[in-house]
Image: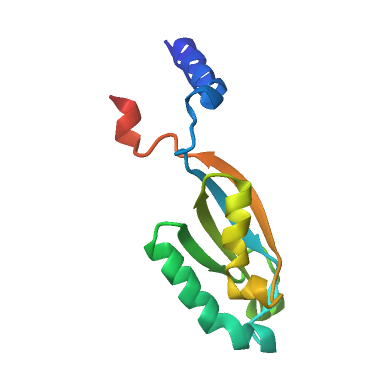
Length: 131
C-alpha cells in the first residue's frame, strides 16, 4: 500500500503542469539580507515597511512575516542584525518580484531580497490526506 501511495504522489507532482492554470497561486519565501536594527535606513523606513506589509497581508498577498534575529548567529550579532522573512502568494516569479518592488525597503535600497519558489499548496490540512 505504501508503494501505491508513493507512486500516486509522484504522479500528482509530475502532472502539476497539466492541472496548473492561470488561476494557480504559487508560494515564494522571501529572505532579506541581514541589516542592523540601528541602521539609519532601517530606522527611517521600518514603519512604512510594516504598513505596506500589513496591507499586503490583509489582501492575502503576503503571509507569515518574521523578523529573524538571533537565530544561527553569535550573541553579539543577534543584538544588532536582523533578517526579514515572509511568504508571497503570486501567479509566477515575475509577479512576486513586482510585489517586492512595492516594499519601501526595496525602493530605498535598505536591503536586498532573495526569492525562493516554494510551489503550490498541496496539503492544506493533515485531515485532508488521512481520509
